[in-house]
Length: 601
Image (cartoon, rainbow, N blue to C red; front, side):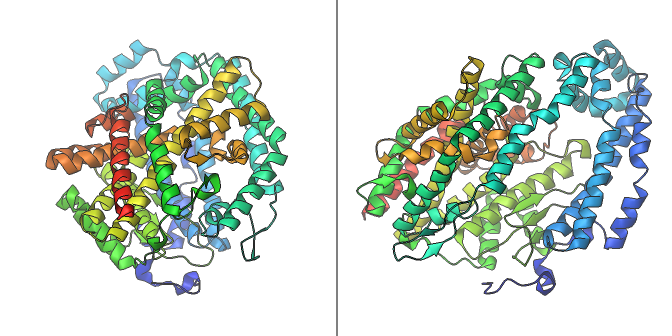
């Protein structure tokens, strides 16, 4: 379906829209359910001060909390889906607002839970388990809730830190306001004098254009604007890093990294292993940049060339029906049940497929406990859209299997493992397509697409992770983060990662200043670890067959029933070692060799 004009929501065919009626048959039914839920926060608040008094009371609270969370999840998912169908629909936006208010009241009513669970003495909780077998179901939940016990302070200190949290949000708020509202960019021209608007949203699409003059003009203009705000942006990021150090020290963590990693149950060794292993394999990235320079016929490869299409034949029309069939066929390697459920997802309208006026941009998958996942797409008839479909269905199947095999309290997976299922699907689709493609040009297009994922996810996100780590280490050593030292550090990182085959233009030194994820401390590394784990798993599935598939499906069915590193070990991947990252990078090297051979023919 090639859309020439973007249709209204009312013009979309029903078979191309998600089946929100599977959650609530009508909007009126949703409104009634929300009204009937109004007393639930008060019901849970009645347990305040009582969680440690008896095993029976604790079980009663946890059971009811799980049931109410299940109800709240359905209310929110329905409202969010309807709001995202058309962001200009005021009725659906109001529904989402009402639901958000309800969730806030629910969160406020249960704010006592964490402190009270932590306050229960270990011996008392052990006695509760012995007295009430029903609590065994919640042992994992209680253990995770009590992870913070060594870092919980006195009531007065906790009150002070709670008050400081609002102040702590200031650096992020300042950055977002400056970046999204106050900064403006000049229009840029191409080699023929045609003018293009330059914004944060349009920058990457301009970097992908074939007109090199346009790319260079956009690159230099874009980062020129950031350079003019360099001191303000450095002051903002310095405040963000010092905030992280302050809260880490206040809560008695050894470092800001430890404060970010311990609560999500990921050892710091995983972070360091990722950076060290990628560092040892920078030669492969340098080779890829050399191949890009050769393929593009450039005497110098600049930073404004690295997003441009290096293979002119890369534009390929992929109708949705073809993308659907190829994705379903490619997942046959995961077994009949997985493939059957995936196929039924298309028939049962899990997906909202095409763009319409006002529809939320991008793509996502959203689980809905006890129903089925929902997938938002804005499908274009491109190879990228086909891989987006595979990616989001990986998330959807992860949600489906976790919801099927876990109680609702454990059916959601954490970010550290979230990208594994989606990227594994992409890798399996890639392997499927390559196995059926002998045409050298088509193979080159596919391999280049895959290599770009390695560059942008594994290498680039690891470079970001290394920047974050160095910035926090500098600040912890007493050094103020300034525009000059941040730029110098970031420029050197780019030179290290891209190598001598690339002209690392001075403008790139300010790129750190536009990355919003740097205001979510020690977050981006998870994209690189998830990608590495997924590639390692897809390789095991290809080589080992049924046993590897069985272990992978167990992992997908695990939700958050144990810590994320242990979950991945079920799938045969140990992220505390360099092995998964090394395995992914070995594949990267082999793909570079094959693409080089194809382009030489």
